[in-house]
Image (cartoon, rainbow over all chains, first blue to last red; front, side, top):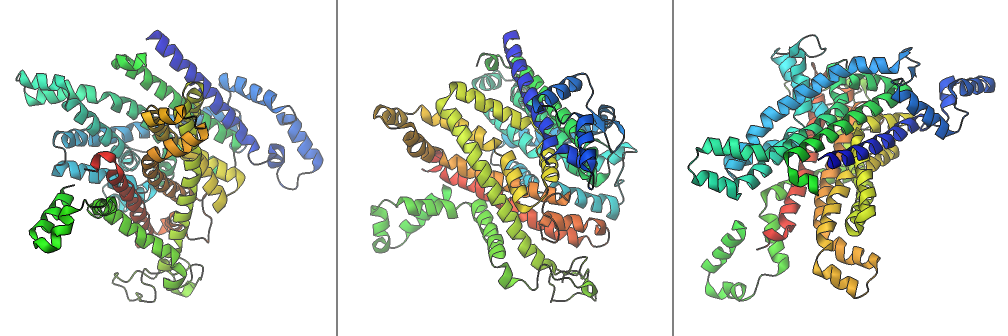
Length: 305
Length: 313
């Protein structure tokens, strides 16, 4: 197990380093960063000064090393637009996005796991077909359109829920549904496939032959094993949702990381964009690493291969 | 499958003379395939809807009631014909937008943009992902490790965010959106092609080709590729749908297709402020996007069912 964990950790660190190189190189995507920072109409001398102050005249490798060392110390740079420390702004906004992601994931799991289980108990039944249709429709709806439609019905026509902001828990209901529904098809299909496989295995037949109650067989014996891949999928999907919340946060005016990154992109605030890409990627890498460990712990076969 | 048995049962019920040949001759593979295709409800619906949207896109200049860029502020915000309003007119069956442009025309031309971006981005990502996946699956070992590493790195980057950031830094245009999406969504191609190739490369005909002295290039192109192609078609439809939804999201956020071009995502963004007054401005392009993505997904699922070898008997 320790060997397995160390190997996974090594890969995770390498991936994180590669991601850091990619997010560092964003500075150079729009051409000369000094030119962009100095602004239009800046003289040669101004541009030269900017280049020297920000250290853009040094070799790129040195600049990257310097940036990485500072990032590791928790210094993600300075936002010229907000006149503030990037790291403190990012970590101030992160909890809101995490909360939204957690609510969305909870919504998705509560909806999709029971649907998947029921669909697997009666394959090709009406319920199974209904679940698959729901999954199909869910995957085809653009999230922003779904969010706007929710707003129209629940916010305006029925006046059940507030449409923007983060003041109370009711404010999180629609954004969580809009963000979480996109995950439900994947979780449902995986639960269904896992349950179908487990239900046809020998030990379930044995459990049934012993005369155990059907509910005990289903939940204590079958679901426990079928749920293992769902756990790691959930971790991965949680990471995806943090990155994907940008659309939902801008629609519902939720003051999280997604809204911040959208504002930063519109202002061309590159240090902020770099920091958010880096932070979200590293959270994702951590989540998949933990999911791998959990999988290895729960299922010894994975450790060996 | 039940449909096949049913129809052969029906032909036996006919007169012996007319059905005699059918009973003696094995049905040709082509006619079996046709039966499988037309017996699959999802495939027929998906293919039908996609065909309609495709025709809309191709014939847009012929069938459109107007011009997609023609503004007329005196005719702005006319509701579609099913609304009960004095302004409703058959000159604009789906109404007009905030600038008085005919909405149906913009929907038709928007289909072109969605299909073009979806198809082009899918081709780019398919080329990258298939190359990486097949190489990893065929060679294994170190190549496999490197490809796996690249896939893991790509998966850890948040797609929407990176796409938005890159498009904003480079500057948005149709070509930039296509390339950025294509370079970002190849992961599923790589993952699926890798495992499909791993399965095929262990089979006897690959070993036979190797022992005959065939070149690696020949083995990959002529022995492996035809046998993993059915997976390829399914992933291609999934990723085309994915690219269409991403383009719509980018355009919705103002960083994809730029006005005045009629992208469905952009049309929804332009009408966002009118959500509580003229909701149809958002509903119509939304339904169009939904129908397009759903039809592509149905087509992909159907193709998988029809081409899977286990469904052939």
